[in-house]
Amino acid sequence: MTGGGTLHLAVATRAFRRYSTYRAATLAGIFTNSVFGVIYSYVYLALWRANETAGGYDAQDAVTYVWLGQALLMTIALWGGGTTDDLAERIRTGDVAIDLYRPVGLVGWYLASDLGRAAYHLLTRGLAPTVIGFVVFGIALPDSPVAAAAFAVSVVLAVVVSFTIRFLVASTAFWLLDQSGVKVMSGAFAIFFSGMMLPLVLFPGWLGTVANGLPWASYLQVPADIWLGKHLGADLLVALGFQLGWAVLLLAACRGVVRLATRKVVVQGG
Amino acid sequence: MADAPSVASPAQHLRTYGQIAWLWIRAAWQYPTSFVLLAVGNGLITGLDFVGLWIMFAHLRDLAGFSLHEVALLYGSASLALALADTAIGSVERIGTYIRTGRLDQMMTKPVPLLVQVCADQFTLRRLGRLTQAAVVFGWACSFVDWTPLRVVVAVSMLLSGALVFFGLFVGFSCIQFWTTDATEFANAFTYGGATVTQYPLSIFPREVLVGLTFVVPVAFVNWYPCLYLLGRTDPFGLPQALQFASPVAGALTMGAALLVWRTGVRHYTSTGS
Image (cartoon, rainbow over all chains, first blue to last red; front, side, top):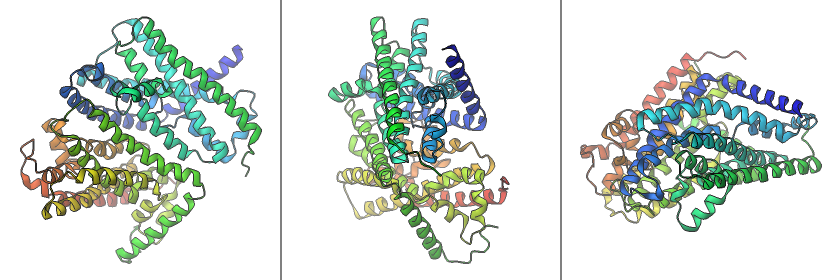
């Protein structure tokens, strides 16, 4: 068991290093995230000026939410991408056959490598916009060490949930050979239902209830609410439990799909 | 160098562009499920974008002084212009990849202007979804406009000039990749950032930002100034009314600047040699 742990840690470290090679890309990305942070901050400031308590947030909560969103955008790979794109490409070319006869599970291998990628993106493209948001717009910081620790756990769970969905999307390539169509559809849902487009607290009535129950709520709304101190005490455990529940359920789904794919699908040769 | 052998007319370039584009449409059909999902998915992204605006207005009566109809006019016109530009030249964003893989070298050996080849390469109709969605929103918003002949002229010129401004921004900022091949995302701040800004009334921004959006990254001409005229509103920043008719000038200038940058970029280009 310890052997497996070391292996996955090694996979994660390699992914971290692989992404850290592209320094100029990282800087360009931080710049772009910050520009979008500024744009959305002004949009939300106008919104909360017109309605000071919209969705139970105040203006500072709203602006904090904007910058957390920009910080987590790459970490949770909202647009899709990340290491699951490598998987989709390997399915298309047939190289996945090599992955399948490795003595390690496909899901665990790619999850480890995606966590390595996410760690790199969190430390660069997550941290830098947060600092800029703090300096320029005075965003709120977590109230207590408990909130900060819970936020950290919540971000890890957010990455896992996002990974499982991206993994399932990439797996459609086993049947469709090309994931791009499904990826765009899934990205559209992710942007809308994660609260990246607009905080889910603003969604009215049944739409709000549905959106808050879907796995995408784990991406941004839940971690952001924990950061903002909207979940306290038992409520905090419920919020983390919500993310954990989806993570476990979707990981099982990933395993099931891999089993189905290896049994049913002829790997592309050539 | 690349443009040297072409003595062909613009009409011929357009035909070549069409031929390459048609090739890629047929290629995309090889994965029909993906093709349909891509078109629907792209329509969905922008559709949900508008649902986002609509949800916003469930909490507001107006956003920085603009009603939902007025914001819809801004949103629809900018979306249409962007969809037109992106359908025509969306692939220009990928020149970094072409440089890295050496495909740009291959393209340079062909008797078609490089820009035409790059823009037509991997042409995709995925933006059809966005075009349709933008047209519907724009059409709806138009029904609230008090039309006069001059307003019709301004509206048509707004869409064309808006597409030109986006053309220029996409081509111009993609040229960064001639100098650095992995800082692609830097351009997104100006291209997609500019597109995002145009979805909202610019009165949400401080004056300095508006000045930047007028004279540096001129996206204010895509829809803000002409829409002020269509809506019969006075400029909230008190800028001269002449700006409301200046979109074609802004479009031509942006496009001209972009072509100049493109030329410089191509001249500066040295192959990666791989």
